[in-house]
Length: 362
Image (tube, rainbow, N blue to C red; front, side, top):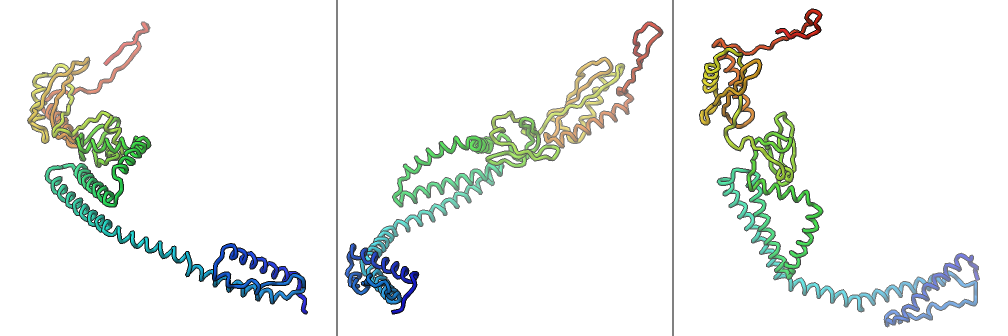
């Protein structure tokens, strides 16, 4: 008999040990198909150490093949296949039972989609006629569209048998916790809606918020975009806008501007004021109602201080342009009439003799 090395022998013994364990497990959990395989086919005598590994391996492989086939028969003919078949049948029955509900949910969602679209179209037409603020119009349309969809979602969940009240309660509690976490963001959101609804100001208005002054370019639910007069864009949170003092310089069509005139002492004040007032009335862009006004505001140590007030377009660019034209026209008119405007004076300080006193000389 041919002898084999110890490595082959150990491999064969390991295979047999594994086979016996599988066979023992099969006997512990009887299965007619598996037990039809006789264990005596694979009995190996341990007396002779010089056993043929080829014989052992051949018998082991044969046992594995028969055992695998037995277990496959058990799976496809036994309890596993029956369980899978029962589960599949149960799922089919549930799907068939829920089919009417699914159809009802789909139809309800289609209905609410048409309803939401119709609401948006109607509101778009109404807002074009009655709402001049584009941001406010967009907010109304979006909010109405969202509300219709929320109602449609609740109806669909109710059809499926969900407890909508409990869901709303849970969302409410979650909303409270989320509100604390996003307090600043929600404050800006609510303030933005309030600004749009109350129309504190609108796009194109020139406002002053805190230290920011400029033209409103955009109003969002979170912030307001203001373009300053030197071209910078400032994004002011709506919470800050809502809580701050806001000055709307263009809330009215007209805005008042002041023009200051200085005259030398000795000039006819009444005549000068009449010339200034007539000149302002002829300046383009100056409103006639309210009419321009003029007064002697103060008497200084060196000249007469006259203030003329006029009304013009409230936008900064137009107001400044009109006031500038009025100043130019006043200077030309007074110069033409021969009235002296104040000139800068030079003062000379000298030390007289040996008295040690400073003497001012014009």
